Image (tube, rainbow, N blue to C red):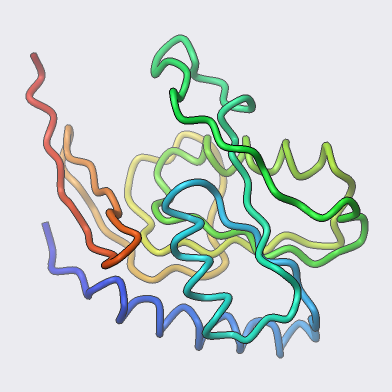
Length: 170
């Protein structure tokens, strides 16, 4: 696996790119939404670095997943915390690792249950190979290629670190 910068280095890069994206698209007062769990950790740091005044929102997409039969129900379901109105809001959706795209699809389904946002910009710390759905992030900290059976996980929240996991195939 190629060398990856530290999460803190990638977060500083994400904050700079996000600020530029918001300026270029003339978006002020965006709603930042972190996806449980790693996405919330990343969003918390970005939210602080960008000095966004709107409180950070969170999503737990456990009930929106389409792969219960394969991965089972998450035993630690947490409530989502969104403002009552997201209609016509500019959303910054944050996740830690973009892999198959299924988490992002589930997050967007949940967001649309609350209303129709003006836009959704996706920010991910890591974008790895293995996409199953045609989704891509607007801003990525690092693109990586992993071998079959390898997974990367963000651990935290303090300190944030990357952990490479290998399936044994048993």
